[in-house]
Length: 114
Image (cartoon, rainbow, N blue to C red):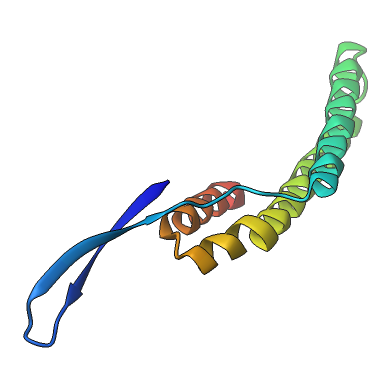
């Protein structure tokens, strides 16, 4: 359970600080999470192949192309996870008034987009 403190100003101009406790459940569609896990497993295999290309001394241009593909796979997995999180957890957080979860998601998006 999280507590979110906020401030109001009443009609007489008095500052009132209070908090609401929120219990945000972190729920996802298990089938969708399994799909994301499978994507990441494939990406790990792909990255292992890129490592082996380097170990064999393959052409750097080809390695860079494969690294670009791995980066794209990681970005796509992140996008799918983001959609899943918004569709479930963030919808619940908004309905519950759980600003902390929304703020955490905004920070995560900022880091993911760098």
